[in-house]
Image 1: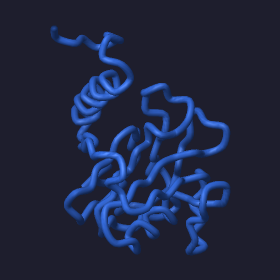
Image 2: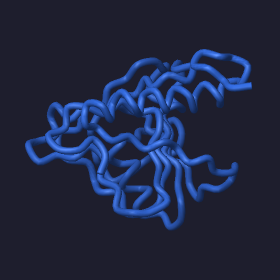
Image 3: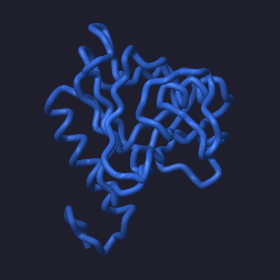
Length: 165
């Protein structure tokens, strides 16, 4: 039996895969490459960092659950942590959120999975937007220099150059 878009027989994971494929085709059509998430076994990550704020503050700390952590701080923390890490989202009460960095984000130097599907309220739809509207002229959304990294569940737009490189 072949699953169709919107077919609920495969459960939430099946819908996620199909929606990632649709999103990838749509965004690539606009010149923005999107990477599909790698299916890693539970416990495959060293540290999990939770983005709790859509602001672009960087005080050098990605505080544990309940504290403040911007995407910029989470990337810096994951770069400083050996081995593959997970960046998940838990901003506010959930729902649609836009992160608008005021400058280019740090390069990703160590393996990390960035999973926007973890933002509460998405029900498998990407509801975390990464907007480059204020990131500067030479900005790249996410510049990944390490192997073993993945990005899923983000809508990336408005960057001068690539959304993901």
